[in-house]
Image (cartoon, rainbow, N blue to C red; front, side, top):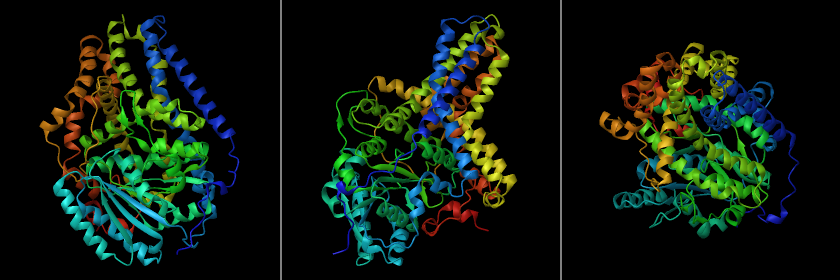
Length: 591
């Protein structure tokens, strides 16, 4: 029998006191900033008197505020820690300091890979380097890989049987592998994991959660296990996920922007959230005993989205925290990857599934026993999507208000309006700007990003890209939420992960409603107050250009051009687990 650590929940030590002043300070700053913005907006709308229409616009503006005000303060705190802390990761996750890296692996860890209608040969390609790394480090007897399939396509299921039987045979005696396919997709991914817990959960201490497009280095896996062994209070430890190198222009630009913003944002939020951190459902490790005891999800009987919980991850995090276990984030980059959607069509499709799942969080907001920060996280996940109709309302109602006003000066003070716009843009891009400052102040990091000129050009390209993409998502969320009110939901289908072109006909069929949302206010302003069009374009341009943007960013030649020019590159050298996949983006970037 392998030596196993105790999993007795009663043996958990009392948690170290968290400095609550951090949360008080954070929310005081957020509240003061939002009050200042609302005052400035009311002042900007005041020249013609403050009427009912102005009040509607002010309320809509207030609904949009939490997303970028909270993002600004997370980024500001994150930048301060990145610049002045000797070890930024350990500053927000202190247990990291206790890991030497040579501790014996004594826990039993299940590696869960959840798949549904994925090409099995690609899945095997993801797993081979990981299993080889575990075997090479002499720890493979402490890990067991479970391929948990919800495939309902008969041809794919047959291919899975052959492929994973061969994979199991190849690694027999070195790394344990179990392949299981459910005949129904009940409960979606959460149901898939729950079925594993019922059958095999008692055999393991921890579970590393992976998606079909996840890659995690073996060194990071071992570090996660060592951290969990050291701190029995930890229930979930989430890694900071970055995009795999991509040859798709859309994915390449998108993941560069995420790479810029995520670290400052995550470090800043981890500083004040502490033991109530996020969980994204993959590229993380969970402690199985409390997960099985406390994180079972109900089937919802009321609300716009009934049935099984779709966005299960954050609910599991708040339930784990409710049970007394910590949920933390390990804000290191370069060892935990996921594949981003290759086209704008796939990106919007995935985002609308998240939108649908997050709308179920209304049910849990009133649950008993949740920590205040846990309730904030659920509310913030809802506001992230509810803010989108507010932005579109500002565009449409604001354009109508300008058109009806005797003159633009009667609608808004130009000086206060421009100040408001500038502050909004600064806060909107604060996480990206924070990393820009950090990178430009570090010569080695600048070189890793391709040098000052390439990095700056990539940053400018990202800003233009986000200014277009964010309003596109606002319009898409607005249309989707309107459909949800009438019971029109989307399925949780298979994602298209391979690079592919987007035909004009497909883009038009999907996105003509968003295009109309962008076009209508511009036509109105062109007929009444053409001088207001440049300001409306900050929101209207994205939806208006959505169809050509979806087509152009999926053209393979554009992605290859970005690679040749060294734009939107990531600073990390690809680890062995990524190099083994022979990704086109890595191959094309070689001399």
